[in-house]
Image (cartoon, rainbow over the protein chains, first blue to last red):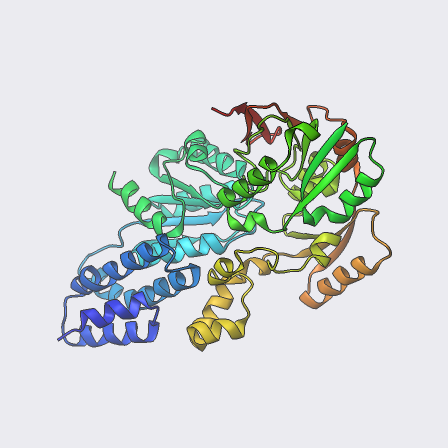
Length: 211
Length: 248
């Protein structure tokens, strides 16, 4: 019998080894992978997000939970794609031009992967043209942009304008974030979404794609 | 005029130097460096608290030795005294002496980490902040050994990699010489660090221009924002950097 509770705990506490071996064990026993995701993994990530919100968890705990989740998902993904199940969405993510700060962006990328998204990470200091090219070639559902400096925030606007000029704006949802970025700014520049932190980014991304 | 200056301690030497030669009487209060790391909300409330401690009947204006600083100054209010703040994104704009010169440099050299006397002698960590515990729990300024103790060796290797990734994005270390240094000791420290980290080193000639104008009351509207009583600072994401709006 698959130990869903143990898998839940392993992901919540960021024990990647345990998460991977418990997942393998369950799959060997013929447990439905979707059940593992719905009954253990997603609840564990939701709980990690809740703990982060109320400051019981901090950045490292969140990173480790997402890493454990990702390890378990790597075993499950091939099985899911065999049954025709797809990732819940494809995301292109990057820190905007001129800005080299990527801890927040990496955290959001890990959380999105842990949340079942396929993530294409363009890195830091990403010019608008590179976002445009990635949207054209990878056909993501969502574009996420990060900035840590008020100096570089306007590059988010430039990138949205470049997507418009390329005729690609309406094919994707756009979400922005980073310490100085506000919901009001997101609205001003015509982004579709904003999240205050990495845990909320996953919730916001799911809502955007459901809309 | 009697002026009060509330400033980040990162500007210590530059401010002492310019206040000593100011045309007006300027009282200075320094706040701990690194407030921006606490997030905009906490930074705003710490600065507002310092402003609200200033006795209104002693001064004609409160000078603010900060920039917009990651929106940490957005929302800061002038009570009964006007506030005067330089239109810069952060202290690097102040050190360059001209926000346009900084912007040009920034665009041409995005991978640059800047150092000045304050950034060298006032600690590399966040020791001055009472919230050191919270920042350390987020993994900032925590050694590899400490991460291993907290999270185990395998996890520590991963966390160290992720949490330090930003520093690998830098290609250049720049020392901004402000003309307040006693000799070349600060410059040598930065050049040495650049060598150790495999970064290129550059010396930039900074300027005290904005500091001088601030303490001398030369607040032309292109370079300084004057916040009248009953108004607050709002961020503008254009060349003006910030503006004012009524508080209520």
